[in-house]
Image (cartoon, rainbow, N blue to C red):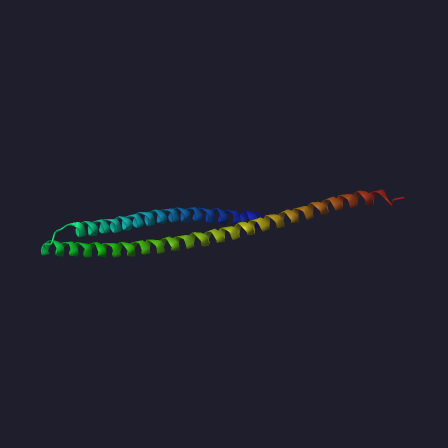
Length: 147
């Protein structure tokens, strides 16, 4: 078995790992998109609530206190969601880095296999040339001197 053939299963395995990693990247992107959408919803809702509370002509202390408390809860929810988005974004970056590393390793293996195939082809050509040279030399040696 040639060196290039021995490496082919490793290259196939590396490519499978790249595909798995690419699926993980896609999943992480989906999670990030959902979390960012949730953050946008929260921020939009907070803005709408604040606007509606400001335009309401309610001056009762109880209503104003409840509105402020609810806005504080919305602010906290927004901060928590921003933290989730940040965490998911970091997860995505780690997943992308892992994918990139796997891709570089696989590319290096593929280049090594290509080099081995080229070396093996050159070696086969040299052997073939030697056989041709030997057969030509054997035929001319049997004829005697050339006049």
